[in-house]
Image (cartoon, rainbow, N blue to C red; front, side):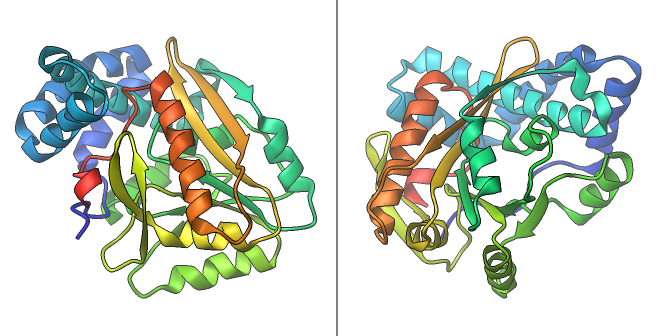
Length: 288
């Protein structure tokens, strides 16, 4: 059983508070409120706090005090990414700067006469990338297991600009398989998040940061069998409202899902070495 429940935490009222602050007081004031919100989650979300502390203490080899501080900072940075997502999609993208590192690989995928595959992770803030990358010849379809509560989704849809990315939500009835197959058949671009799975899903195992962990098999089985380049893509938050996009070609053995998964875990390790605070899997990832 993966202890992750498939839904983001939060309430409509909580989102309304931050959106009000963003619109009327500014993004920096909204960030300042995170000082208290982060303390709340640090103390009252004991299971999530324990797992993130474990990440810093065991997998990042931090000392006890540093692990406690970084656990709090992890909540704070995660809150910043949520505020940024709301602000950017509400039309404030001009308040941010963006750096592209390897975007020519994505542009080439959009031009190729074949399906394109991107694999990302729950690190950084990939969902905001669409507002900076411009228009492509093909639309990106993001496959996600992270289904917001319906009330939150409806509220956000009422205030945000229409997204440039289509979302395909992984469901227990497997209807998402038909949507993915259609996009691939239409030679579109699919983006998977390869570090989360739902209960009863087929998984593969690989080492990440020194311990064995389970990953969803689907993204790697599908991607390894297509005759198209596979890209690992991450959008990481940096200081002063700056985001850095990384897109790298995956090197793996064709039709070998395990080889692709190994390349993926190595790429995550490299990203987390640069951005250790931006690991946003709030459940017992290595035992899931």
